[in-house]
Length: 533
Ligand code: NOJ
Image (cartoon, rainbow, N blue to C red; front, side, top):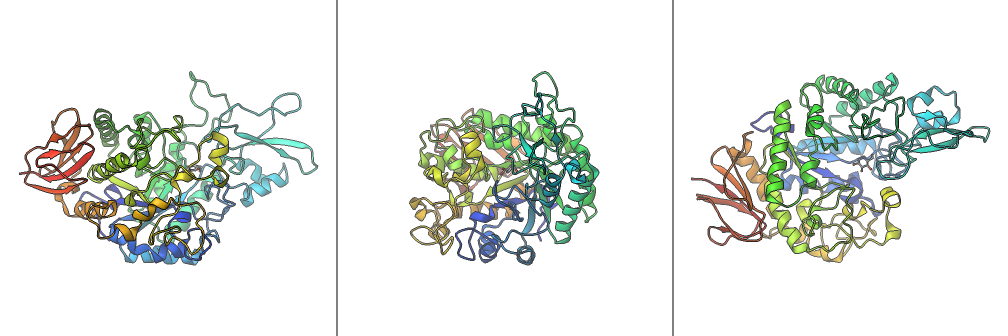
């Protein structure tokens, strides 16, 4: 397996996120599965990615699309079997592709045996693995706190005692089907370290850590007040958990990676997770949410480089994932930022503009120093399906927050002229836009102007270009409308984020362009990779 010149694989990898229910369906039930992924692994080989991050595939009641795990050591029958997962890991390795699995430590499913035991009796020892508390008020019928949930809504659900009387409440920062674990309990810590070993023993190369900053709670359960430390976000004690996980990972020889999902506006606090004895990397949501604006983008990149350099960690570049509006859609709106607080669903979208910018963003994100993430369908230029009938929404966020993440989770189009586009023999679990007939893998393969061929060329060049293996980058002064930088002296990337053409610096060869150039002029919303003289 290839390792980049600038260190272990996770420092410079292109990591492709597979969302298993929407990648490819092998058994014809309309839901993607492991056999479907195995049958289509050659797509990832042809794309040239270094690793796959697999969203959760464990047994789950699917209250939150698998982020409600009932058993971390098996596979949900909808996706296949543990033997199938092991075969996939082996087959990916044969193709030189590493595997990262998704672990969800903040909460488990309410169907997990621990929670079922905890509910069965107020005296069960498993009770202490969670946050059970009596209610406030004379009858205990008021919630222990007024904390707001991560999906909106309240965070406590009242239980019923075995004798039918109303009982204690339990904490869930997400849905009631996702009770939060008590990370102050040593059994919880030991269990997850064992789960890491279970997957490392099966050859996985990395772990993606869900909601990594939320694990610890202030046991005095204070209300959230501006002037006080937050009671459950980014508590200092969480770092001890990741130091222990790092020891587990390091015991496997040093190239198993821990990658955190850390949503954190304060970059210094964010970087704490990436200290040398903690996580190897974390997703860059600052970049994902940044507007298509040269000044803001430059500042964001600088902030990222600075924060990561301080702890010696590799930056990461993320444009989309299964939780956010696809960037073809985001970049086609008047407001190109993303945040869960600012719901832009249904605001006008210019998909042609969004696609042009997404092409430029691909060259940007694949030429910055560090690791780059590709969410399945980015390489096909898929947009958010904003036309899913509401009654088909499955995302629990929809009811709690009025925004559904289903629009970015629509099954991939592979072949043919109409849905299901080779995804399945049956109707896909979410509807695919008819217009995706031009965005199938089949339709784009061999078309030099397609998004797919752009990604393939870019990833190929990324491997070959010596400059792209250097950890440093230097800004090129090119005016306020564009961002431009060199890597290793001979390579440059220029992205025009303005509405007018800009003149390119003197170059020897144009290695790759996201759209046609006009001589030495770079058109609006276009990016180019250059070999400098
Ligand atoms: C983050 C995951 O990416 C998201 O899909 C999930 O709903 C929450 N964490 C809760 O696990």
